[in-house]
Length: 369
Image 1 (cartoon, rainbow, N blue to C red):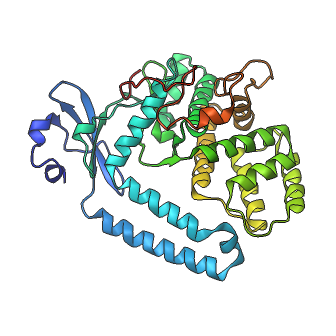
Image 2: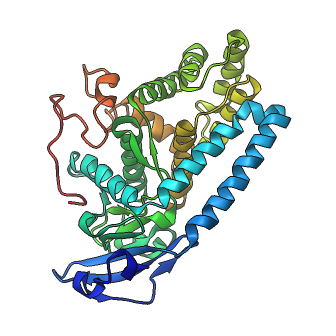
Image 3: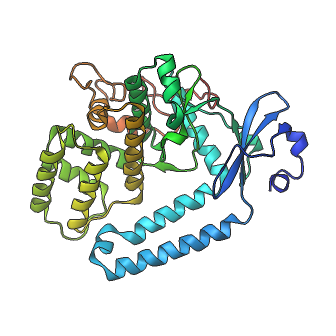
């Protein structure tokens, strides 16, 4: 596959190439290599013949979703056909490594506009990437699911690491509109300098300016415990049917807020699960873009809980979003600047977040520290 994608020029492109993969999965595998410049890279190579297998599985999933939506009330209320179509589009994107290369560059440019952060995005060698080969900078570190000893030995602040990762993800979702959709512990490295490094941008979510604004309003209304504001923001986020009993929706959301807001025992995953049930009960359904956000936040909660047991994910997320620290005092790093509406920030083009004066931030090398 590598020879076919590079036109047989493997020796011209790489000074060395490890034939034994560093890691392997169902769709592709990753090899260590070195460029003639001396740069260490990892090369992700797609398995030959995997596309027909994926298309067959997607066809089965979409036909099953259509049958369930046609034959069950819960399938119709969840909009299973729409969710399955969104899943299929996302998986097809993951099979084109040029899209993953673009995703890395977009997220990296946005990250570079916020210097001093504790999360690093690897660089991509775009000129060497093809539809089925991805060449990236090699980051040296330990996956978070195996970093316990390193954290203890180096005396790192677990809470600060967890907060940095959460802040980075919220910036991606609410400001940049392009975010890592699968931040599980294996996709996050603890680097030698104490920062975190993000890997694997095959699964990426996107939110346009309108959805970012509405999601921000939803988070703010939830933080205030405001059922009317929560209902209004929710109805902006989901496709709205002809009739909605808004009073009943507001009452259900009031009970939802009473159960979850201010409760340290309430996990983000459980909260979003209850929100899904309310949406389904009222004949609404979650669009694929929003489902990707909820999945990413649920995955991130599991990651930071493993990194920093006892970390109050929901409390910290609301604090970072609303501009106060968990004790209600200091401005949070993810909050919009004073005097600037959130919508003006959120509608900056993805990958070019507005600077403090509202102008596009200057471009920077992908993956730069």
